[in-house]
Image 1 (cartoon, rainbow, N blue to C red):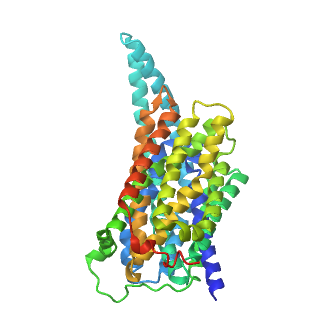
Image 2: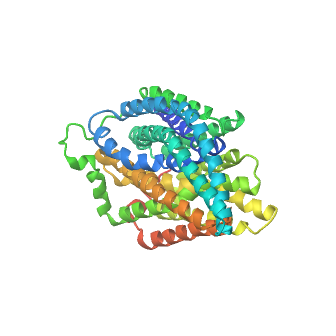
Length: 457
């Protein structure tokens, strides 16, 4: 019985991250190669935005009225249908944005020429005409591009709540928390398989990857109805506005260790956005032929460290696990900052090592955080608590990070070239400050005790 449940939960995790990995990892390349690079900010911003909004719905619906597996199934089917509309919208927008790209280059060249010869009226008039043409082209393209971005947002509004729901379903239906890493590792495998399929099919810059993701979303939605029954833990309890805003989960913040954990989790996601935003560009700059495939090596390392987690919990405890996860971010970005200015293997090896560190970066911090949250929350608010963490980390944290790395990219770009060394040292330093603060302020003696379920072997 236990094995059958764990198998179904593993399939759930596989499909959950397969559908996300099928399109999100190479979204930037796909948009850029199809003249839609200007939509990248809005497209990548869909995930943090959805992560901020979705839990408000989730805390009310999943915990109060409907079984978690039913809510998850409905959301994924709707989300899959919405994502299937994205390729058509993108094809419609593509020619308009191709004109914008062309006119932007002309306007930039005209403006530079006029700046170099300020007394030349002919060049000044040409620059003004080019600027007007750019405004017209952008005005024509923007409505078409907005449709694409809103489809991504709508899909992510459906998808993001399922991250918390899948954790709730898993934790509710496993008898031993040591089983969770073994189940969650299939999510990592799903992400890897999706990336390999997209790369093998040559879809990294093709809209076909959205159809693959959409189909897997609908498939998981249907499969969700077969998952173990996970009743709403707060059913038949009085409803008030506090529930909608996750006040029950927010009360956990009154516990100092949990507050420190939540604050540091949110802050560490700011440098995380740098990884998602520019790693594929970094690999291409260094000379890796297949950035998407190379990045899957990071997920492969996740599998190794995920399987080690029960042993590490028993030996290290929550605080050291979380701190090691933060330290890995410092080392990764520090290596990347140092690598530029080097040549040959001294350039490529640190970049590759940083990719390999992804297993520690993710597992030791984020998966440990999921388990820690589950241990701190009472059953009736467990779904809210998991959703709160998703909202603050993948919503607020990544949202702030996206703004930060966009600003920092501009500041580190000189004459069209990005100073990669300067760029990567900033998130390394920021992650280091967060790690030191966490080590100084976090201590949860009760959870660190060796008799906790996670540490038991």
